[in-house]
Image (cartoon, rainbow, N blue to C red):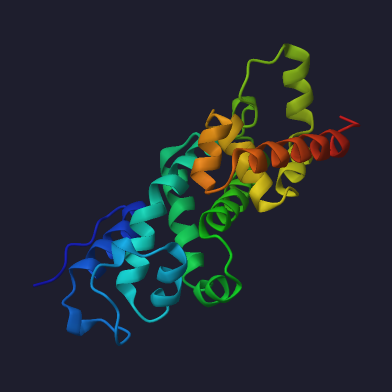
Length: 214
């Protein structure tokens, strides 16, 4: 009997993760000595296991997909595009498992960075095609002159944001696009609120210098 694959490209990645979790153990390549309860393992442990155990990758996907989708949605304001960005982010993760495991990089900020870059690429595409409105790059209600200035310089604004470090960009986007409190941003990224505050202050200074001529 053939598997009924979803017709929407956005749903394929999630469907694959469900399939991986449902496969019998003997059909998966599992490292000797791996405990059956992967849900209790840390991201770092799962990154190591995911290189040879597809179930570990499925756990990472289930653990972080909603965060990345919500993050992309806050930037793009389009559910289908946000889902595409999330799927592409996890597709890229499959080729960076070894590097992330060996460098001990925190996974979630890296995922946010990849999603941010892909979302920014999409915003640039929409700008080129005349599909980008001011609401896509501004969260408040600016006056008419500010709106015109933003629209005239949106490529520079997007490039400046893209120049932030992955952690700083994650902090700025979570704080101002998703309107999260500093303590909630810190909880999301697994760090102390003081680190988030310092990153935000540095990002504000960088953006002011980068965009001083606008």
